[in-house]
Amino acid sequence: MRFRSAAHHEKATSRIGLWLGIAFLTCFVTGLISHAIQHPPSWFFWPSRPVNLYRVTQGVHVISGVAAIPLLPAKLWSVYPKLFERPLVKSVPHALERGSILVLSGAAFFELATGILNVGQNYLWSFYFPDAHHAVAWVAVGSILVHIAVKLPSVRRDPLPDPSRRAFLRTTWLASGVAVVATAGVTVPFLRDVSLLAWRSGRGLPVNRTAAAAGVTRDPSWTLEVAGKHFTLAQLNMMPQTTAELPIACVEGWSQSASWTGVPVADLLTAAGARPGEAVRVHSMEREGLYRTSTLPGEHTSDPLTLLALRCDGEVLDLDHGYPCRIIAPSRPGVSQTKWVNRLEVL
Ligand SMILES: Nc1nc2c(c(=O)[nH]1)N[C@H]1C(S)=C(S)[C@@H](COP(=O)(O)O)O[C@H]1N2
Ligand SMILES: [Mo]
Image (cartoon, rainbow, N blue to C red):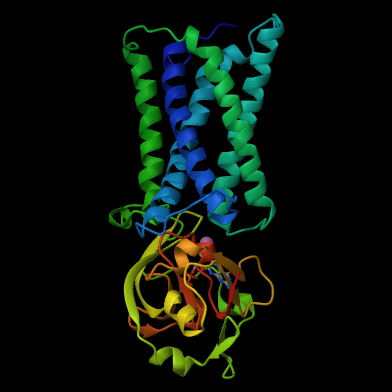
């Protein structure tokens, strides 16, 4: 059987392939950044400014992933007849090329599917998801590079495709654009009202893990331990306060700014006789749960905008947002903005 539909044409295939490649590479690089921030290798450095830096890289990660979702089936559809061409194997290089396409499609599909499920269903897999999503990303990008190397010589430089092919391309761009606009409002403020499919669309600050889910209650005997010294809530409230507009940027892609007020971690360390600029482990009242602790690198503990926040938008912190205090630091993933803090341990 021969396919003559407009979609099944090398030019359309390579155009979509180009955009899919760009979307995947963008997603890969921003994903690696997010992974490195959460599991920093010794050589890794992530700046604490501009305050929205992580918000932007993670927003780009999720948006480029969403943009790729319509591109992947369009690409597969446009090469579909070739995938079943006979003979299935002509030569060793040909077999390798076919094999790499199989790996590529499988890995790409896995990345998009797990990404979307994660975004929609809040850490169903906890440990498993980030590790698998990260490992398979290398497989996907590796096979994309092999595929590009193999295909580049045969991409014909012919003029613009004919009108029906252009229509197929246009439909593909449109689907991709609609997917982005429908979801980007989770992180792009001016799209908030337009993005019908945004998974976090409320105007208020979302809550990712409630106090009830975390098993945390108000504890009148609470104190904050900093490098062995104890501070009561009243003492913290009496220290000089800093107010700053800072975002929470969840790894799921949603982000939201609020006005936070609290004591700079640098001041707390100094008051406790420790030095700002050292890495600090943040502990919370939560007993179990993946995000009950986090690490503030030296770059962050010396930044005067790294706050132990006591207030949000002028009000005493809500229990769900981390009462009595939480970390709010610039350019940092939401998972590390630890709530219900009770100890800062200098590392
Ligand atoms: N102790 C603790 N802090 C936590 C979490 C948690 O599960 N436990 N979740 C984190 C995640 S994933 C995000 S995105 C932010 C969300 O903060 P919010 O619920 O105040 O919006 O809190 C972070 N702080
Ligand atoms: Mo998060």
